[in-house]
Length: 119
Image (cartoon, rainbow, N blue to C red; front, top):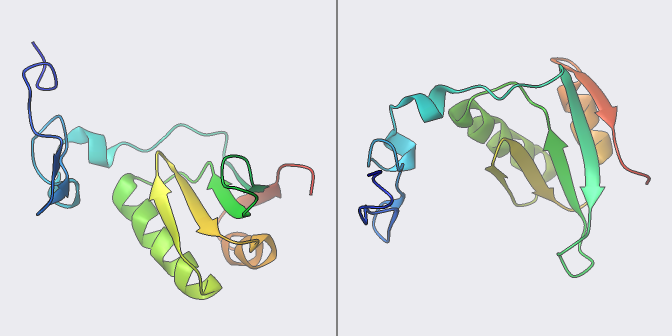
């Protein structure tokens, strides 16, 4: 029986999200889930999405070959650079607003960057 089936804690108001594998807060997680780097084709894709956001544009960055902690740190840098909010979750970064040009300039120094989507 897995921890989730046994009724293990997955969220705490004091600690936030809890890792289901090691039962520690996600920020302090030391299990293999934090260290995993997502498989990608080596191309970072930047797009603008509005679906499910009531018409508000969000810049989405996919395919960055970093683990969860490094992805969160990069998201913080990009949010500061763009001067807007955002998040890093599920292997991608979302920045509020249309900041594709600025993000493309920032990331092209480290990775191959392509725009995806029609706009």
